[in-house]
Image 1 (cartoon, rainbow, N blue to C red):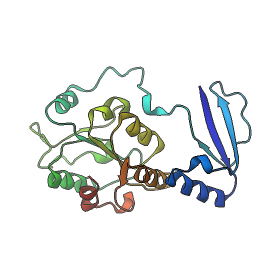
Image 2: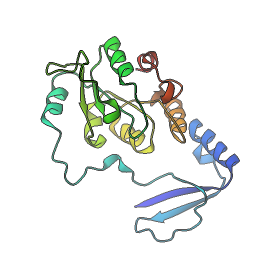
Image 3: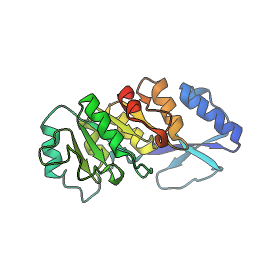
Image 4: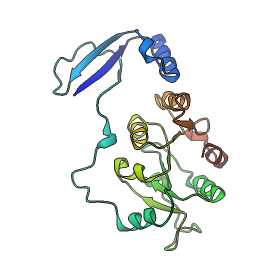
Length: 212
């Protein structure tokens, strides 16, 4: 398997790269050096301070060796209604799960909440054994979960964006830093999703409602 990198050495080139990425014009982007890497790691050369992998495998197909299927309660939730929204912000700091729950109630949409930053408070009105609105898991392989969902609200990291595209579901991105903004622009330009609010740190309930 071949991985392709593009080498970018100047900030002006990085800005141009992001513009071309967002506009879907990568075939016209000639700045820097494109290098093909073998899977065994040989022939490494020419990687500058900004190296972008343009091809090859990401974690979107990875299932941990010890994964033996989802927790029973998650399986029940997935089978008890239409495909839910998946919401997860990875390792990004997020302390406002209440706006997410409020948006779900306004939309009357089911969701799987992934990660500790999206753990609902124990006193939430829907957080009980009869909860049909959402189900929370600390972690779950996206390669397993996303094909069973209707869309994904995320921070726009490379891995989760590729997992969304591979699953064939819309990717709603609330970016916080770095290439997350580029991915948000790219999915909008390609009609594969939308940017959800301006950025994750200022995300509101209405941003979520409008994006969905």
